[in-house]
Amino acid sequence: MSTTHEAPSDDVGSVALVDPRTGRSRGSLASSDARVVAAAVKVARAAQAGWAATTTGERSRALLRLATLVEARADAYISAEQAGTGKPHAEAHGEVAQCADLLRFYAGAIRTDLTPGSGHRLPHRESWVRWEPLGVVGVIVPWNYPLMMAVWRIAPAIAAGNTVVVKPAETTPDSVLLIAEDAEEALGSGVLTVIPGDRETGRLLVRSAVDAVAFTGSRTGGMDVVDAAATRRVSLELGGNCPAIVLPDAPEHVYRGLADACTYNAGQSCAAPARVITLRENYHEVIEGLAGAMAQRRAGVDFGPLNNLRQLDRYDRIIAGSPAGIRHVAETAVPDHEKDGYWRPGLILADLPDDAPVITEETFGPALTVQAAENEEAAVHLANSVPHALAASVWSTSMGNGLRMARLIDAGEVWVNCHLEQTAELPHGGRGQSGHGTDLSVLALTEYQRPKTITVNTG
Image (cartoon, helix red, strand yellow):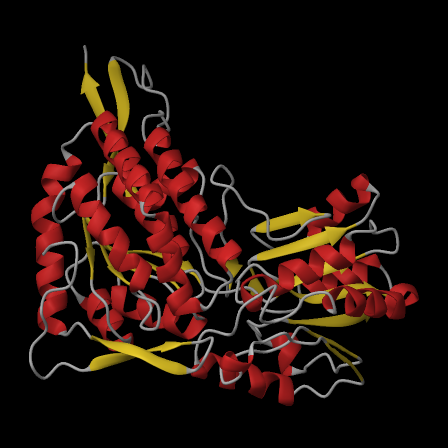
């Protein structure tokens, strides 16, 4: 079947699947080996010319059909998301709805004209620009948003006329396998192929005969992709460690806003706030305000567990290696039958050295650090002091000052008086060690297309 993985060879390994809410096994899935990866790319290659030859209107209608199928099976998608991530129902429900909306957005976006204007640019010549698909795109997505991160990549790539081979994270293949089934019905055979597997499967995909790679994951993984991809197009989203500057005139909802954003998906969001920076005069007030708000966010009710044992161990190592003079730990509300799951409570850490791992590394968990700066310029310096540059926020009731500081922060996305709010129409992408490339918005279409200029001698 072209939209799922082929039966692997007898000696291929399997990936153990675990429910992060309980820490218990929920089965296993065969890992795609080199033969399976090559076959998947071959299927995608065979389908690509026919898919690219369709009109934008035909592609649009196919994507709309896919969105309808996703919505029709929303309960199945929600269950699949929860099985692999342990997200609360409300989070999973919202993310499935966002995926359907994103498919509809690109169904419309591909019918707009994004090219430079055609016309008389040279003497006795007429010129225009065609945007053409890259071919076969290999997509590797992480476990924190299994379906949503896949659709962020799949929707614009397919809308642009490419076929796609997706390697989901080894711990969360469920929902991506579901969308592969619906894509075969809505888009046709070979347009979207899914190859479950481990990290080696991802490496095999990058080294295969794909024309481009879209990778969302760790910086180490991203660097491996760049090395293996050579001259092929690469789009990277590599993480955040995002600052939130809280000024003395911040609005009243700042503490609730940051606690909610930090614990959404248990803090496992690349754009989540991680480092709160405030002025020294406001330092203890901010710590107490955040501690009070975090106390209202309970693991087991308001947010889910960390995703896997590797992530749990990494998070614990970072926290243990970061001595904090001030530490506020929120309560949990984990049911007794889930006590062995990968749960961690909301956490506020302050009075830390500036080189503490929890400040210099992307923690990727429900923890906020608080740092004091002498003035606004020093606050911006702290915000820009780590190599990541994905997202940030500024909190101030002075809109002019908030916008001024937003301009000074080095990040691809900056919010003022809110955080972690995104929509299909607005671009998202990083700088520095957060990677390069654009997700969301009409600009993402250019990630999966290349321009061809055609000039005709009319003289």
